[in-house]
Image (cartoon, rainbow, N blue to C red; front, top):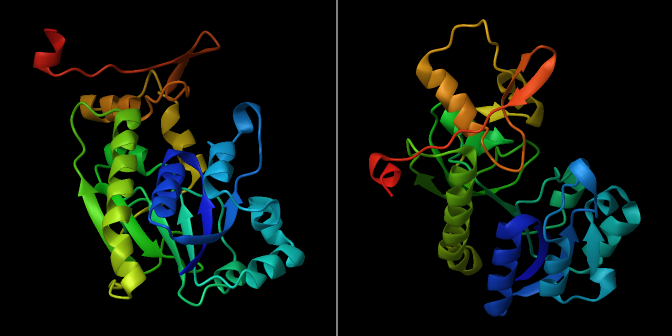
Length: 260
């Protein structure tokens, strides 16, 4: 199958390298635009471009997907399928329509729970199932038919960082396990339920990040917020005292770990 690959981050790079090792036919690559500072969204962009080893005219940036000329260039590559792996941009209908066999997305959540942003955070804070899902993309955000999914346990010692790392690993393993069935045409499609599940936007963490010093929390609620937002070097949860923000990080150790 001729693949257009939309990738970012460690998982995007790992999956692309694996596909290359399997001699899959990646004919186009779309990456995040180069960025700097706190607004930087691209991760391992240069490594992705090197791994794809494609001519420059077959490498695109996310912003190019707004241009009719770029859509035409992607169409000219005659792709069969699209693969979105930790790609942080919504693909519009005119892009999704390029793929006769659809476009698959690898999402670090146990859909239909935690569609959208920060699934690792919400699995801790809202105590919803965590996991990895490979699904077809449609006009919604993480709402398309499920191909396969794998649940990941949320441990009492998990921070947002440690859970995210294990969700990344689960995504990689799930993709490697499922891709042969997709390629062979034997993968199943299970529609997501019309009701239930959860969805979040990036801004939703703003409502939990500030710890109100005079508000009542249960111990569980407070611990879960702080540990869910512990992900160095990001700032995470904080309180304000004397007009100054004080940021919080939580270290979680089992009894055995605390003895070492």
